[in-house]
Image 1 (tube, one colour):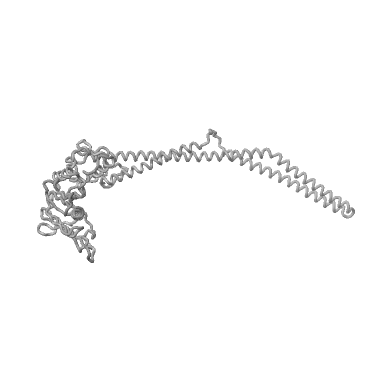
Image 2: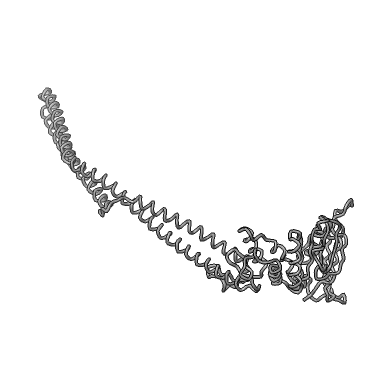
Length: 458
């Protein structure tokens, strides 16, 4: 395990120049705004990576808003140095060994190998208010976020299996997605069941099995046949009348030719007789047509009435058939939604089992989980003494420690003196180096203390 032996910061954030030897516990104290957080932020930037020219110290009254460049350097107990130099255009990382030679690894890879312990702040875990439901949830989230929990593809149900291992955050996103999908499917299933009930109410209360569509088609055919019969009979009467007219005209013409020479008056009489004869024929024609229509009227009325009823019944049957088909489709869809809901429920149960198994296998002695509650040695978190909680917090931090078990703690004044001492004692017992910032009650300038024997006095 590597340890830091010296820390140097120049012109980064609000720090002009800070150099001090590193011990197991380093405490930055003083009033607000004296530069404690600037030192912490500069060190965190080394491990965060990336380029941000705004972290250079600001100038006052000059032409440029920032100094030309700033740098931070840590020296390890092996003599290896890690240096970060920040200018306007770029950030350079340099790693050199005890002889001043470049380490044969890329700077970022070397820094990442030192570890990610600084991402975990045990002080925040210890300061969580576990007396409220919201506080217990926040404590559980903080602990789980700090733990390197990984789910292999085989740990997950087939419905949401991934091709690569996933962490707890990804696991929770998958579970939330399935839970939301299940909720939506459940709503759709319930809506479908409600729609089925309403559609069932709309069906006519009849057990009649007669095929009214077929009855309608038969009556339509009967009506057309009757109309054709009527038309044919009327056409026959008209034809006969036409023949008689033609015969009468011919007879009249013949008589006229015979009588024209001798009896002009007889011709006129013949004409009158012809008109009378034509009128009689027309009267007979109309009478015959009226008789046909009267003869067929009862049958026509019967067919028309039956046809109207058949049309209405057929339309009703078609509406009923359509409603039944709709109900069947809805029933199938609702059944599918219910099956989908059950499938998603089984997936959620499998996820919960996988999560529970992972939590039960966590390598932190004495740490257990019961729903949203965190237990230590079977006792609720809020009822455990600070020293034991500090030990647990640093065991959690150690899970992410790489080659450099180093922790940065900011804003620790929210811990009371006893808790503060317990946190530091647990850190030391866990093998960590700690750099902590704490606002002094009496204020004053920046003070850097190393390996203070009694932190309650700091």
